[in-house]
Length: 104
Image (tube, rainbow, N blue to C red):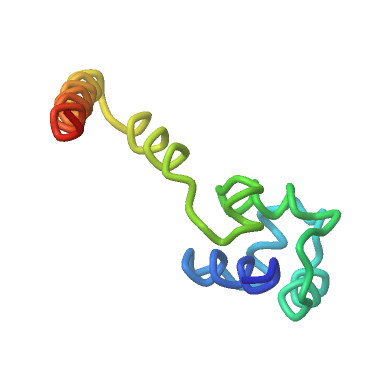
């Protein structure tokens, strides 16, 4: 998927118009520039970082169109209170042990 298609996919998944995305970039990227980028078949733009930040994704996610699992897990972990974070870590450690046993 090209950068423009990825921008559109992430933008629409968040329910944002091009104008709203422009505002999230602090006006650095105009609505017209976003429209042009979404129509273009390119792999990068001078605005890639600003758009990625505004959409809450990494540049890699925006360029490849694939969600970064580590980034997503970090966001989930950080959204939890202390007790839930401890529980999540315990569960993850249990999964790692099970995975290791499955390889042996």
